[in-house]
Structure formats: C-alpha cells, structure tokens
Length: 211
Length: 211
DNA sequence: GTTTTAGATGAACACCGTTCATTTACAAAG
DNA sequence: CTTTGTAAATGAACGGTGTTCATCTAAAAC
Image (cartoon, rainbow over the protein chains, first blue to last red):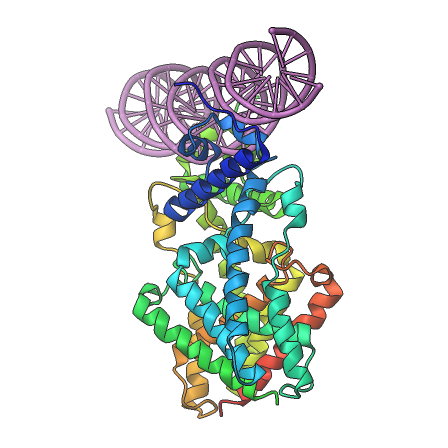
C-alpha cells in the first residue's frame, strides 16, 4: 500500500484540516496530555516528523485548532446578536447567558479554549501572530451601542466589557474541579446550572444599575 | 568532597524545605518549564532520582510548593481581617483590594497559585489529598458575619462568596497576556492598576446593593 | 519523457518524569 | 567501641516528549 502525496494546495488543505480535527478530538477526549504530535500523527496515519511540513511547531498547531473553535464561537455570538430584538442591555444579558451555557454544556471545549495554556515554543509562528479572536470586539460593539442609546451611562465601554467578561469567565472557572477550593457539589451539573443562573441574575442587576 | 546524608527527621525536613524553595524559585523565574525534576535536583545538588525519597511525584512536589504559598496568602488575609475595624462590608472590600493588590504586585506567584495546572500524575499522593487552602472559608466567614449583622440580606453566603471571588479572579485573569484578547495596554502596569481600581469600585457598588 | 520539487519517511537528538539495583553514611544496638 | 541495620544517595536505564534532517520518491511542471 503506497502512500498518496498531497501536493496540490487543495489536497494539502484537506490533509491539514484532518490534522486539526484529529488533534482537537484527542484533546477533548484525553486532555492536553492526549494532544501529542505522535498521537496526532498516528491518527492521520503519517510519521510524526511529517507534521512539520504542515505546521512550524506543536504550539502553532494548537493555535490553529482553537482558532477554529473561536471562529465558531464568534459565529454563534453573532447569531445571538443578529436575531435579537429589544434593548442593548437585554442583548448583553443574552450574551452572558450564551457564554454561561456554552461553558456548562461543552466544558471540555471551554477548558481547551479558555483555560489551557498553549504549549511552549522557542518561536512565534504565523498562525499565532494572526491569532486574534473577535469575540471580545463583538461584545464591545454591543456595549458601545448601549452607551449610544443611553442605556448605559458613566461607563468606559472597554472596561465595562472587560468587567462583564471577567465576571462570567471567573465564575465559570471556579466551578472547575482543580480550582483552589474544590467544592464537591460545584462539580455536579445540577449545582452548576443553579449557580450559573445565579450569576446571570447578578449580572442583570449590575446591568440595570448603570442606566 | 563526600556527601552528607540527611537521616534525622530534622535534617530531612530541612532538605525537603530546600527542595521546595528551589522549586518555587525555578518556577517563578522560568515558568512551569523551569520546574523540572532535573533542574530542581541540580539546584539542591543531588541526583534527580533522589527527589523521590522526599516526594512521590512531581505533582506532589508541586502541591507542596503552592501549599506553602497558600498558607502565607491565608495568613495575610487573616491579618487584614484581624486588624479591621468597621463593618463587614468594608472588610469584604478590603479583602477584594488585598486580592487585587496581590495579583498585580506579585503576578508570577499569582499565576503559579491560581492559573497553572498541576503537573499530571498517575496517582494521588498524600500531599494532594490533604491539600485544602483555607482562604475561601475565611472569606465565607466574613460574608456569614455580614449576613448575621444584616449588612447583607437575601443572600446565600456560599454563592455570594463564590461570586465575589469569581469576579476578582476572572478580572485579574483577563489582564494576562495569553488571554484570548491580548489587549496591548492591558499588560502595562499603569493600566492594570487603573483597571483593578475600577474593578474594586464596581465591587463596592455590588456590595452596597445587597443591604 | 525528463526534470524539478516538495510530501513523506525513519532515525536521531535532547529533554522529560520515573524506577531500581547498588552503594554507603549514619544511627542504634550490643 | 565495634557491629549491624537502615535508608539517603547514586547513576544508569526506560519509555515518553517535541523537533530536526538526510534521504527517498511521487507527482507536478516543462
């Protein structure tokens, strides 16, 4: 059985896509330990060294993987924004809810995207250089709109966006088992749902406090 | 030059302490990459294998290191609490401020304690089993007191403590360079101070909203 | 049909955490 | 003061990791 070679740009892109998909699968199934160049190469049926014809380093591969997830994430955020009718404050609530739901319904992916340090490398490659998820700017735009509508006042839009994001992210993170106070019940899905809806209510209060 | 042996319990404790200190130094200086068994052994002038006469695994060593930092952290929190005069709400503010100050003044240590995943291991050792930082309970007590004093009402103390902690932690985390939207200015100390004082003000507002 | 090029190979390198048979310094027992 | 048992320390080894590179060769370009 002789190996085919991916020489045309399309074939190479297909092969690269397969590498990303298998890498992601391995991470989601086995955590960062599972995301090894050898394991990925085995899954796409090639030698480990050949991966370096597609990517500069494991770190670059990592960024390529999560970039796709962030693109999907941003897309879904956009869908929430585009289908929304009503005030910008209501929309901000919806975005917070979207984020919290994503976190408890797809925890492994959330951990991959928001909580896992990128593998170290001696150099910064092209993928990492161009890596700039748009999700934050998307929410910033909504906050700006809320300010323009005078739904929010006395607010620095960037800081305010960061603040809301920080609240949501921080509260998701302390539900994770390895956080410093591993509350037993915090790992039960029921409690997580209860807690995140509590967080969402607090955010509503905060948003209402700024008009 | 023949090597001394640490046979008495005291000598062994001293040697162990040295291991922890050098391990911590390496992490704070070079990050998690620097925290390798070989590098630590070299610093304490022994063979890498000998570390396993002191500790079951690298993971255990890791927990031993940060446990000390958490003990110090809890101590300092206690000092804030013990020297406080005034309302419990004011005290909660002070604790938030203490946390934020710690985060921006000793970022490397903060990252080590709160943001670095423990090294993986196939087994859970005694140090990890007994690992239970008290900082959270300490703050919970203050919240409970605030509830008893009727400074806070309609509040589940555990959830409320988690919420404040989540806010503070989450907002520190998104100032870190590797967070998904690496805002250039967010890495400048001046901006970090400005932002954390913004966060502190928001927390004050939130606390005042619950009486 | 020939030449060029780049995907694929497989061995190697330097690092990592961990294990273990062995040595030997030291504390306790006689 | 000597003997003996024990456990700290050694150093080599094992299997894992990311990465590099000379080499081969399939497929595109001429």
